[in-house]
Amino acid sequence: MPKDAKDPKGVRHSKKYRESAKLIDKTKSYDLGEAIAMAKKSGAAKFDGSLELHLNLGVDPKQSEQQVRSSVTLPHGTGKTIKLTVIAAEEQQAEAKKAGADVVGGQEIIDNIKKTGKADFDILVTTPDMMAKLAAVARVLGPKGLMPSPKNGTITKDLAAAVKELKAGKVNFKNDDTSNLHQTFGKVSFTEKQLEENLETLLTAIKKAKPAGVKGVFIKSATVAATMGPGIRVKV
Image (cartoon, rainbow, N blue to C red):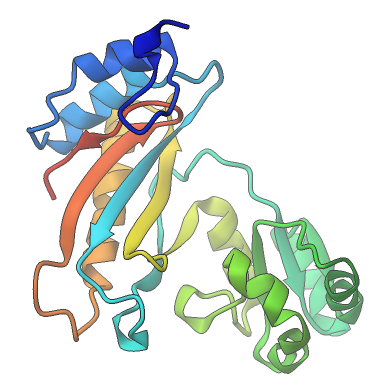
């Protein structure tokens, strides 16, 4: 690999990444449609990569009232296959399985998480009456962002509806402890129109989730990027 294959931070990038990065004006913020078109072409992955939105928010992550956490159903889904687990009482498990949940169970799932320290799923949905039992594995689920929450609809009495929404493209988003928010909004193989509609829907939902206590600029910066591709600043 040539000597200039590293960026200023010492990270090595592929030839396609470097070629794509040269075409991007880092001082400019692009319209959503233009940025998406560029991102689709710049992805360096040899597989059908994802398109991702990266935001830096004007929130204080140490303040609980300034946490950004909500959900939205993208009109065209994310293109990702998610593994969804439901923990519920035995009499409610059949409806969750019928709705499309990948794994359904009760106390035995909690016991396995506690024993192994692992959570082999992308989303966990449960009912209000099971939350007290889930407290036993909060230390495993919490850091992974897998603890169910009423804010994103993963604690519910209507399991069938929740499972169907999540499988259809509902995404949960929240800021991290550095005031950033990262969210996939589609695949490179999606059309530009599909990606733009997904991104517009996502941005609208994030803006609506702005905490009341945030008085300054809410979205400080926004970039989109394909998997293994350079970031492209966008107007929001």
